[in-house]
Amino acid sequence: MILKRKQYLLIVSTFLLSILLVACGSDATGGDGEETYNWKFVTEEQQGQVQYEYAAEFAERLHEKSDGRINMEVYEFGGLGSEVNQVELLQSGGVEFAIVSPGFTGTMVSEGQLFALHFLFTDDMRLNQQILDESEALNVHLTEKYEQFNIKPLAYWTEGAMQWTGDRPLTTPEDFQGFKMRTQTSPLILRSYEAYGADPQELSWGELYTSLQQGVVQGQENPIFFIEDAKFHEVQDYMMISEHNIYVAMTTVNTDFFAALPTDIQDLILETVEEMRPVAYEMQERMNDELLGAIENNDRHPTEVIELTVEQREAFREKALPVRDFFIGEVGEDGKKILEMLIEEIEAATN
Image 1: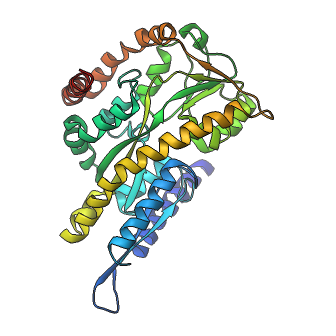
Image 2 (image 1 turned 90 degrees about the horizontal axis):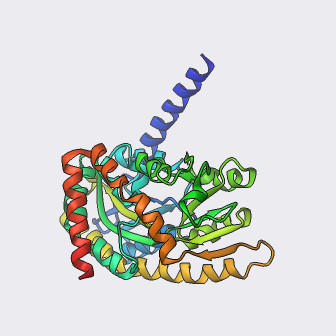
């Protein structure tokens, strides 16, 4: 009974917060008769990390382009709840914009889980960004899937290659046997690590540092910049340069909200999205390069950095490939077509 009461209060609180946020985002008319806009942009990261800095730059550019008519308040992770809470607020209109990792929407838009497939993209990060920018599979067909849930992806972009950290070296699939690996809330990510023999554990990143420190989980995956900035390397003895995947983020907007905006305001938003593509790439590239050095040179919290060989990565690739069949079985014919089209686009880009 106590648990049910707590759940009820949580639901009511979330509902009231959504109403309040929607009210706070209402538009007003300025002194010159032109409409002004006050919006919220929520991210999954903290100030100084890629998503937050992207959102802050996005907000500043829109403010300048609109001659001060558009004002965006940027939220760090945790300011409006967990990653899942933030997605729910975006859908309900409690916030207008959000940077969303597809992994946190996997139980809603199952096709979006394709980004969790290991060794799907190339080893060339700049080429990967070009594929994300130009892919019809993603920017048309996958986007349509999200729009059915009142989420409109405006851009797909990478925060860099994913690496593993652990309390032991992870250089072969056998090293993952029984390993408690933290993952996002995604059935496909769970299956990907089960393919290596691991024991994956779903966990919000806000709980991850303490969980690693206490041994609740033994390892995790993230781009280098995030590993260093979130201090995960302080409680992990090893970091593997595995590059088994790329971290993809989506710049998103509430679909109904965007559709109701005047055309000129929509155009300003889309123009800014395009401007931010190279900016986002340069941000992640610089942060990942600089913070790899910070990890390697940290004498207080030494972390052994191990770069996997071509042969070691190939052993993981062989284990990962059958997970694509699991993905197809989970998502059905539409998801299969999106994946097959994306694979064709990747192959075409590399030839």
